[in-house]
Image (cartoon, rainbow, N blue to C red; front, side):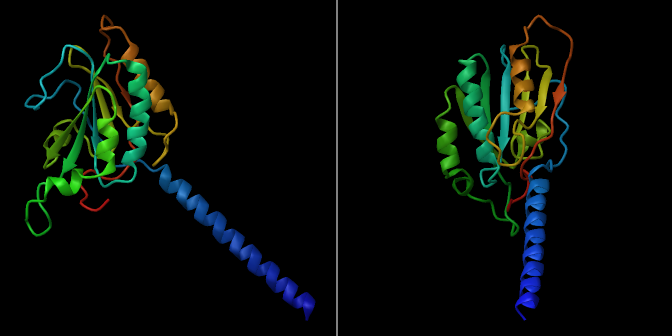
Length: 208
Protein backbone atom coordinates (compact mmCIF):
# COMPACT_ATOMS: atom_id res chain seq x y z
CA UNK A 1 0.00 0.00 0.00
CA UNK A 2 2.82 2.37 0.95
CA UNK A 3 4.75 1.52 -2.22
CA UNK A 4 1.63 2.05 -4.33
CA UNK A 5 1.03 5.45 -2.76
CA UNK A 6 4.67 6.31 -3.29
CA UNK A 7 4.39 5.50 -7.00
CA UNK A 8 1.22 7.59 -7.22
CA UNK A 9 2.97 10.50 -5.54
CA UNK A 10 5.85 10.17 -7.97
CA UNK A 11 3.43 10.21 -10.89
CA UNK A 12 1.66 13.29 -9.56
CA UNK A 13 5.00 14.99 -8.92
CA UNK A 14 6.17 14.26 -12.47
CA UNK A 15 2.91 15.53 -13.92
CA UNK A 16 3.10 18.70 -11.85
CA UNK A 17 6.71 19.25 -12.94
CA UNK A 18 5.81 18.78 -16.59
CA UNK A 19 2.98 21.31 -16.31
CA UNK A 20 5.27 23.77 -14.55
CA UNK A 21 7.95 23.46 -17.22
CA UNK A 22 5.32 23.78 -19.93
CA UNK A 23 4.00 26.97 -18.32
CA UNK A 24 7.48 28.47 -18.02
CA UNK A 25 8.22 27.62 -21.64
CA UNK A 26 4.92 29.18 -22.70
CA UNK A 27 5.69 32.40 -20.86
CA UNK A 28 9.16 32.51 -22.39
CA UNK A 29 7.72 31.96 -25.85
CA UNK A 30 5.14 34.73 -25.40
CA UNK A 31 7.73 37.19 -24.05
CA UNK A 32 9.85 36.72 -27.17
CA UNK A 33 7.03 37.11 -29.68
CA UNK A 34 7.21 40.36 -31.69
CA UNK A 35 4.24 42.61 -32.26
CA UNK A 36 2.77 43.40 -35.65
CA UNK A 37 5.47 44.20 -38.17
CA UNK A 38 5.86 47.88 -38.94
CA UNK A 39 6.98 49.74 -42.04
CA UNK A 40 8.38 53.13 -41.09
CA UNK A 41 9.01 55.51 -44.00
CA UNK A 42 12.60 55.83 -45.19
CA UNK A 43 12.25 59.62 -45.18
CA UNK A 44 10.65 61.95 -42.64
CA UNK A 45 6.92 61.72 -43.47
CA UNK A 46 5.17 64.70 -44.99
CA UNK A 47 2.27 66.11 -43.02
CA UNK A 48 3.68 65.25 -39.59
CA UNK A 49 2.87 67.66 -36.78
CA UNK A 50 6.57 67.57 -35.97
CA UNK A 51 8.79 69.87 -37.98
CA UNK A 52 11.93 68.04 -39.04
CA UNK A 53 14.79 69.01 -36.81
CA UNK A 54 18.34 69.84 -37.85
CA UNK A 55 19.46 67.25 -35.30
CA UNK A 56 18.86 63.54 -35.01
CA UNK A 57 15.31 62.91 -33.82
CA UNK A 58 14.05 59.93 -31.82
CA UNK A 59 10.34 59.20 -31.39
CA UNK A 60 8.85 56.39 -29.29
CA UNK A 61 5.21 55.35 -29.66
CA UNK A 62 3.52 53.99 -26.54
CA UNK A 63 0.15 52.62 -25.52
CA UNK A 64 -0.27 53.95 -21.94
CA UNK A 65 -2.22 50.86 -20.86
CA UNK A 66 0.28 48.32 -22.20
CA UNK A 67 2.33 46.71 -19.38
CA UNK A 68 5.27 46.33 -21.77
CA UNK A 69 5.54 50.11 -22.18
CA UNK A 70 7.19 50.56 -18.79
CA UNK A 71 10.19 48.45 -19.81
CA UNK A 72 10.71 50.63 -22.89
CA UNK A 73 10.57 53.75 -20.74
CA UNK A 74 13.18 52.33 -18.34
CA UNK A 75 15.50 51.61 -21.26
CA UNK A 76 14.95 55.14 -22.58
CA UNK A 77 15.90 56.55 -19.18
CA UNK A 78 19.34 54.93 -19.39
CA UNK A 79 19.77 55.94 -23.02
CA UNK A 80 18.89 59.58 -22.31
CA UNK A 81 21.41 59.68 -19.46
CA UNK A 82 24.16 58.82 -21.96
CA UNK A 83 23.01 61.20 -24.69
CA UNK A 84 23.27 64.45 -22.70
CA UNK A 85 20.74 66.18 -24.95
CA UNK A 86 22.45 65.37 -28.25
CA UNK A 87 19.21 64.08 -29.79
CA UNK A 88 15.69 65.51 -29.97
CA UNK A 89 13.49 63.00 -28.15
CA UNK A 90 9.70 62.66 -28.24
CA UNK A 91 7.25 60.20 -26.71
CA UNK A 92 3.77 59.84 -28.21
CA UNK A 93 1.03 58.37 -26.05
CA UNK A 94 -1.79 56.84 -28.04
CA UNK A 95 -5.34 58.09 -27.51
CA UNK A 96 -7.80 55.98 -29.54
CA UNK A 97 -10.11 57.89 -31.87
CA UNK A 98 -13.36 56.43 -30.53
CA UNK A 99 -14.75 53.78 -28.27
CA UNK A 100 -16.62 50.66 -29.55
CA UNK A 101 -19.86 52.63 -29.03
CA UNK A 102 -18.59 55.47 -31.21
CA UNK A 103 -17.95 57.78 -28.27
CA UNK A 104 -14.80 59.88 -28.16
CA UNK A 105 -12.64 58.62 -25.27
CA UNK A 106 -11.22 60.91 -22.64
CA UNK A 107 -7.51 61.58 -23.11
CA UNK A 108 -7.15 61.52 -19.34
CA UNK A 109 -8.17 57.86 -19.29
CA UNK A 110 -5.13 57.01 -21.36
CA UNK A 111 -2.55 59.45 -20.03
CA UNK A 112 -3.28 59.63 -16.31
CA UNK A 113 -0.83 57.03 -15.07
CA UNK A 114 2.54 56.70 -13.40
CA UNK A 115 3.92 55.94 -16.87
CA UNK A 116 3.46 59.61 -17.71
CA UNK A 117 5.34 60.56 -14.55
CA UNK A 118 8.25 58.34 -15.58
CA UNK A 119 8.34 59.92 -19.03
CA UNK A 120 8.25 63.44 -17.61
CA UNK A 121 11.28 62.58 -15.45
CA UNK A 122 13.50 61.82 -18.48
CA UNK A 123 15.62 64.90 -19.23
CA UNK A 124 15.07 66.34 -22.70
CA UNK A 125 12.14 64.06 -23.56
CA UNK A 126 9.00 65.84 -24.77
CA UNK A 127 5.72 63.99 -24.18
CA UNK A 128 2.72 64.33 -26.50
CA UNK A 129 -0.64 62.64 -27.00
CA UNK A 130 -1.52 61.11 -30.35
CA UNK A 131 -5.33 61.29 -30.78
CA UNK A 132 -6.55 58.65 -33.17
CA UNK A 133 -2.97 57.40 -33.56
CA UNK A 134 -2.52 59.70 -36.54
CA UNK A 135 1.20 60.19 -36.02
CA UNK A 136 1.74 56.52 -35.22
CA UNK A 137 0.18 55.58 -38.53
CA UNK A 138 2.17 58.27 -40.34
CA UNK A 139 5.42 56.84 -38.97
CA UNK A 140 4.34 53.24 -39.52
CA UNK A 141 4.21 52.27 -35.83
CA UNK A 142 1.90 49.36 -34.99
CA UNK A 143 3.24 48.10 -31.64
CA UNK A 144 3.74 49.85 -28.31
CA UNK A 145 7.43 50.51 -27.76
CA UNK A 146 8.20 51.17 -31.44
CA UNK A 147 11.11 53.61 -31.80
CA UNK A 148 12.23 55.51 -34.88
CA UNK A 149 15.43 57.51 -35.31
CA UNK A 150 15.85 59.96 -38.17
CA UNK A 151 19.13 61.69 -38.94
CA UNK A 152 19.79 65.35 -39.62
CA UNK A 153 18.78 64.94 -43.28
CA UNK A 154 15.47 63.28 -42.40
CA UNK A 155 16.61 59.77 -43.30
CA UNK A 156 15.47 56.75 -41.29
CA UNK A 157 18.35 55.22 -39.33
CA UNK A 158 16.56 52.94 -36.86
CA UNK A 159 13.08 51.47 -36.54
CA UNK A 160 11.85 48.90 -34.04
CA UNK A 161 11.89 47.92 -30.39
CA UNK A 162 14.72 48.42 -27.91
CA UNK A 163 13.92 45.70 -25.35
CA UNK A 164 15.21 42.13 -25.45
CA UNK A 165 11.76 40.71 -24.63
CA UNK A 166 8.35 41.86 -23.45
CA UNK A 167 8.79 43.66 -20.14
CA UNK A 168 12.61 43.28 -20.14
CA UNK A 169 14.30 46.40 -18.76
CA UNK A 170 17.93 45.42 -19.29
CA UNK A 171 20.34 46.01 -22.15
CA UNK A 172 19.69 44.52 -25.56
CA UNK A 173 21.33 44.19 -28.97
CA UNK A 174 18.63 46.51 -30.34
CA UNK A 175 19.51 49.23 -27.83
CA UNK A 176 23.19 48.88 -28.72
CA UNK A 177 22.33 49.22 -32.42
CA UNK A 178 20.27 52.35 -31.74
CA UNK A 179 23.09 53.92 -29.74
CA UNK A 180 25.49 53.12 -32.57
CA UNK A 181 23.26 54.89 -35.07
CA UNK A 182 22.99 57.91 -32.80
CA UNK A 183 26.77 58.14 -32.57
CA UNK A 184 27.30 57.94 -36.33
CA UNK A 185 28.67 61.23 -37.77
CA UNK A 186 26.27 63.34 -39.77
CA UNK A 187 28.74 63.34 -42.68
CA UNK A 188 28.09 59.65 -43.34
CA UNK A 189 25.64 59.77 -46.23
CA UNK A 190 25.17 56.03 -46.78
CA UNK A 191 21.59 55.12 -45.97
CA UNK A 192 22.11 52.42 -43.37
CA UNK A 193 18.83 51.41 -41.75
CA UNK A 194 18.62 49.08 -38.77
CA UNK A 195 15.28 47.42 -38.14
CA UNK A 196 14.42 45.32 -35.10
CA UNK A 197 11.31 43.54 -33.85
CA UNK A 198 9.11 45.47 -31.43
CA UNK A 199 8.05 43.37 -28.44
CA UNK A 200 4.88 44.84 -27.00
CA UNK A 201 1.11 45.25 -27.25
CA UNK A 202 -0.72 46.33 -30.40
CA UNK A 203 -0.96 50.11 -30.49
CA UNK A 204 -4.46 50.10 -31.92
CA UNK A 205 -6.00 47.76 -29.36
CA UNK A 206 -8.22 49.47 -26.79
CA UNK A 207 -7.59 46.65 -24.32
CA UNK A 208 -3.93 45.44 -24.56
